[in-house]
Image (cartoon, rainbow, N blue to C red):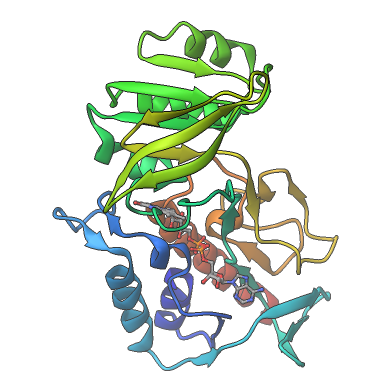
Length: 291
Ligand SMILES: Cc1cc2nc3c(=O)[nH]c(=O)nc-3n(C[C@H](O)[C@H](O)[C@H](O)COP(=O)(O)OP(=O)(O)OC[C@H]3O[C@@H](n4cnc5c(N)ncnc54)[C@H](O)[C@@H]3O)c2cc1C
């Protein structure tokens, strides 16, 4: 939406293609407390509506469908949107990301009420409280270390004995006074009333289960940028689409912004910044194309 806003204000002809409602992951966020300008926080859906209303103050084409395929060309790119092919001189990929879920009872019901996939977003809600962090890779360990500065106690729960995260993170976590590491253990259920109160943890070796009182559960068991519709020509790595600092991909005329990019900090503020940068670079590209 930020990219569209910047392009529209510069007089470009813009189509915004969105398969659901405008807002993406923000719509799944109960309360956003770290987007500047809202000192008391703002509901995710309210921020999404405000952004959509802002874009709507400029005339543009809204396409309520899914981009299913992209065929890059030299000066024009073809997009399959729903059943129809459309042509564009430039495009900005902003299809975001999804977080892998645990898939246990209680998880979906408690998202935003104790279950989180982002320490940077929600850690502050758990100051001086007890949380469980699930996962064994680098992101789980990094996020656990971040949370350890805020919480009173943290259980690090991993289904295997060995962690995949880098050794220095492992050392820091395993010796951290606030962390208790539960290896070969899985969460079978997340329990609570209006908020999370406990997790049912099973030790896979002994088969023993216990109800662990916690206030929050942070799940870091995998992250996937939404890129399945992209052609092989667009370079990506494990983290997503690779861009330069101007949000240019390796394919001239194709830009990427937000969580779809390979980057570390996935937030509304960074998505907005990427969108503004991508729009500015796309305008420069169009000027040079039309010269
Ligand atoms: C539960 C939760 C809480 C969060 N809390 C915070 C927070 O407190 N503060 C913060 O700054 N960040 C928070 N985040 C992260 C933040 O929401 C994201 O960083 C941000 O939304 C990324 O924006 P985006 O536009 O890149 O992608 P997304 O928000 O993922 O939006 C992508 C959009 O693309 C659409 N789309 C996908 N594929 C297609 C397709 N093929 N065709 C057409 N449309 C398509 C989707 O429908 C979606 O609307 C949270 C995320 C989650 C999941």
